[in-house]
Length: 463
Ligand code: HEM
Image (cartoon, rainbow, N blue to C red; front, side, top):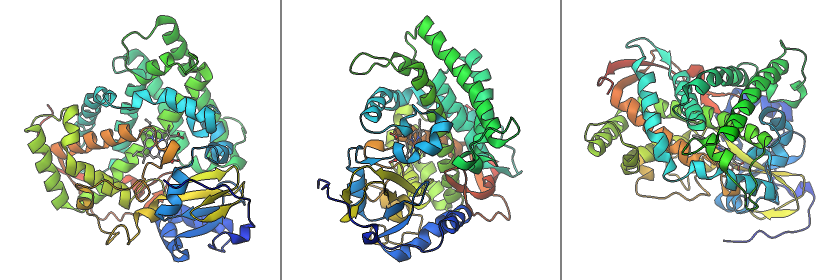
């Protein structure tokens, strides 16, 4: 792998050209037509410069494997995300959130938080994911349209909260769920754009968007703190939920995470882990409703692997075509269009000399739509992923390098189990007259109007 060479900064005029339209117009255009706006910037070539995440500093966008490799092979000290996103996300997630840390602190927190999201642990969550999906699918009406995105949110929220707090903790779970749902509904609701803008992060009482947000957040925070103290006092013997694992985690000096760290990471996991997966699922259904031949192949594969019985967590790895379908969904319609880093010290990225204070972006959408890498890039074709391993510099729906999504394995596993369960239980069609438009939500891009669908037929009774 090529090392990144440090060099003296050069004038920003040496940065690649980009759109000259005012910053506000660029933002507005992205808010109204997210994919369309990103796609249209392809006319500037492989790299182009736009205005930064939260200010006028230049952000150089890379869409080619060489530039993206340089961004993802940085060790996290020269190229920082926490520094860039802190001012916006700090008041929302808390300043100890993994998303806001850089360098050594980020490294320590990743090591503490990693174990619950890897390997065999997935099997613990697998049955839970299947049962929750079955319960939600069983209440869908036949013949009446309903928004499938909302239903996917119900599933992923339930999964996330039960994985975090423990499957059997009904007394803790119900009141916590109510509080978290109120918080998340407001954070993702119509006032979301105001919450994510620093200018509007002012508490003008409980009827103002930010005022309501901080009050909802305080309610969740108090409940989380009480739960953390309870677990510290009572012990977490034999418990496999994420909160218990984090309460017990120790760094290389034998130090546990502080209460504040634990609270902020719980917020981070719930916020980063539920809406993202629900949106990816909504996109999967968008593609599948337009490709019955893919649905037939998926059903054949699932039936062959399970023998017609409920999917067992350890069978998930055998579902190769399902894996390819999920990858193709995330290639064509990634829920996040770009990952960004702030340049902390002058550095050369993909041959471009970047000054400190500027930002670099690895554009997920444009990299995933390059015709030289993905022939006929606008076509939905899961076969392009069968029997191949895509390069992390041309396919990166979960970002990359030291900051790659910590929940990627968890999310992929959940996507597979939920899709397999839904496809085994119902036949879905798009609601008549629905015209899909990609819509920007707080951060993610989702099909418009929650994507209404109709259950045409139930395939088998609940197990
Ligand atoms: C389909 C679902 C998901 C997608 C597409 C997704 C995507 C992403 C992306 C693009 C990033 C930024 C990576 C970068 O900057 O290079 C990220 C970071 C992160 N994601 Fe996810 N994510 C998903 C699900 C989840 C889940 C289920 C969890 C938790 C269980 C989660 C937790 C996080 C966290 C904590 C980070 C910050 C990592 C860091 O800064 O070190 N995500 N995710």
